[in-house]
Image 1 (cartoon, rainbow, N blue to C red):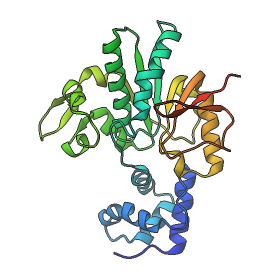
Image 2 (image 1 turned 180 degrees about the vertical axis):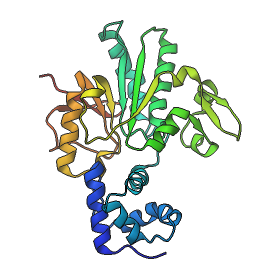
Image 3 (image 1 turned 60 degrees about the vertical axis):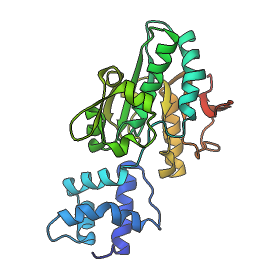
Image 4 (image 1 turned 180 degrees about the horizontal axis):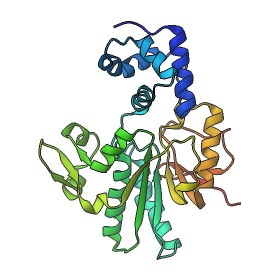
Length: 276
């Protein structure tokens, strides 16, 4: 298949940054080529350059498809493990003790991909709830820019390869049921904790409401420093006082925001919204 011309690559990078904030840089031609390849092959008579031209010129179908493939990222169950241990051992106990008994604990899983993070949070909660015999409610909101990924989340069905990537066997037994085609489906008890909706991290966060905990992990690495600052400012605004932010294991907000205090515990670190 043909290559991508430099001019077309630059125009495509501009489009993706304007559409969803992702900065590709000068050395990601291979990534763009591999992600766009299925779209180009399925478009009769298209080359990479002609497909990108149609995106730049406003072809809505090509634009939406390009955003889908460029924002779809791999995900795991209980990724890095420590955030979920922190939830169970430190954060959930504090929130249950501190909060009004009638109000649910609210968690936002930003850029939730195919749902593994949101459902991992839910399994951690159900395990904690069972072990501590409490009646408190939890609500998880998962958001993603990709409608295809959100359909996966809502369907809540996973093949054996997906299941094998980090899901403990006991949780598989407790919270999944076998269905046809050798797939597993999330049981209603877990599925009922989470709702999913489309959301662009460049948008207005007001309609999302307020949260006790935000997971925005392995997402900021794709944005420019200026956009990172804007996103962190908006996350802080939708966190309740003392709210918790989890970033990816290799991510840091030093020099990007003064809205948070880094909390380093025995199980790992997270960021807490400073009191105003």
